[in-house]
Image: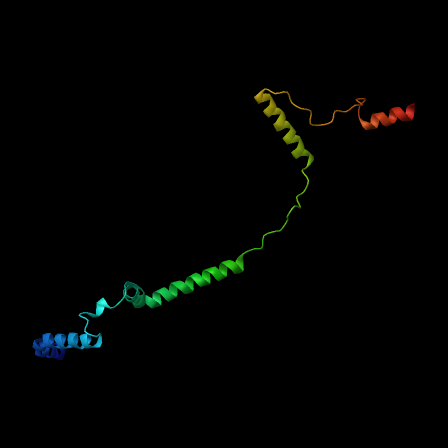
Length: 137
């Protein structure tokens, strides 16, 4: 048994070609005698109509997702500490390690190491012993 839709389509099948001709003639008159409606559409508009416009809800959803990601990224960003020119002086251990590295580099290159630390002029021993010598004298 045929559905009513199939019956109607079968009945008007013969007139379909004539309807298409009438539609094209109406378009020609509306476009000022141009042969086809697609000739008048610029390529950017055609691209917009074929790619963007049918999926506008998807594009809008993607745009909202990116905006949300950007907002969350900015909201969760921690401020960077600003310490311009305020560095702590190097510790005694760091200075010793640097002197040792320079000494080893000089040995590898074959140069004489330059004295980087002041040599003690008074090599009489530790300070505590010097004080006892002064008191005893």
